[in-house]
Image (cartoon, rainbow, N blue to C red; front, side, top):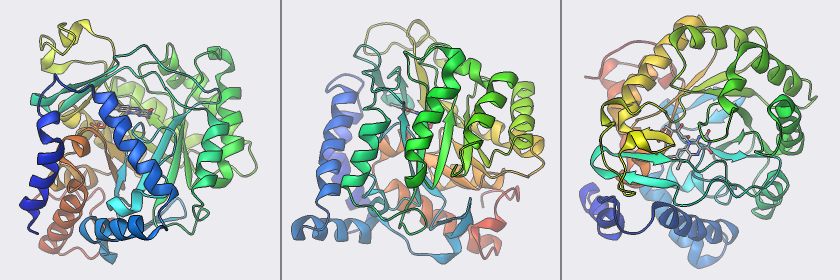
Length: 385
Ligand SMILES: Cc1cc2nc3c(=O)[nH]c(=O)nc-3n(C[C@H](O)[C@H](O)[C@H](O)COP(=O)(O)O)c2cc1C
């Protein structure tokens, strides 16, 4: 089947639904997909399912060693990952490699199970290839997450086809001044199964969470978590809405306190030039609470990576996320300094063929530039040809 035919297949199934803001609720669609993924992951050795997965992997996976890198001590088969927030409960942990991802970030997971904010809380903004969400860390909690992962019988860290990170957040009921204890409890439980862990202090939908990006607060958090004897490589995920000076400061503090990498960016409270756009609720984007994701984030996502690269003096691996929707935008993020990239909103709009399309595009660009390995692209500032 040609690539366009394959894309047509996704479009026929979902494209109509995804091309309009009205229609089936975005969260219901996400949960339906996750239910199918959960069943497939639990039963991936059953003949019918393993045949489907074999077919999926032949379509989506690329085994090109020039895309391979060791980062945080883990073997990333390629630099494209699934961003946090899609698989909040880890139900697809055994399956993400079949979709071609080099890594997947599970969560956000909190210590206490929580329902999140009232629904509706996830909105498509189809024309802009964007989304607005105010989910509020709905998740089943760290203990249930552990059993969900165990049930899938996934190989242990170091031995996996797809690197798995866990993204940790603060439970809503935990007071802000006890946040470090809440993150610590989750990390202590989940460290043995995590290739890396992320301190998420940048989601806009948990009251006060972003204040944990402040110097004193983040130092306390990092030091508490680093005290864990088996602490996995620890990353921090930051917001796009920090000022450039605040970005420099968090990079400095992260560096000085032993953080292993920085993920930039989370969803934005900024509405860019879309303030007056009316969404499904009948209100304008400016009137609605929540974080914006997708194409409108592309420019800021790139700026933040460039800024981080300078302020960390290249010392820390960076993961670029926000508005990456093509091989070109992935290349630009890597050439600006990201070692790895993640996708979320564009993966929903474009469908699963986006991952191989990015991987093929990166490979072709490397050939055009005469690079042997993706590592050479990082921070090269080489333009897309
Ligand atoms: C519905 C939704 C839920 C999200 N949930 C989380 C989350 O739980 N934790 C997190 O760190 N980021 C979360 N994110 C942010 C994404 O991981 C990513 O940083 C952001 O969407 C920008 O990437 P994108 O433009 O490719 O979507 C969420 C994004 C969306 C759209």
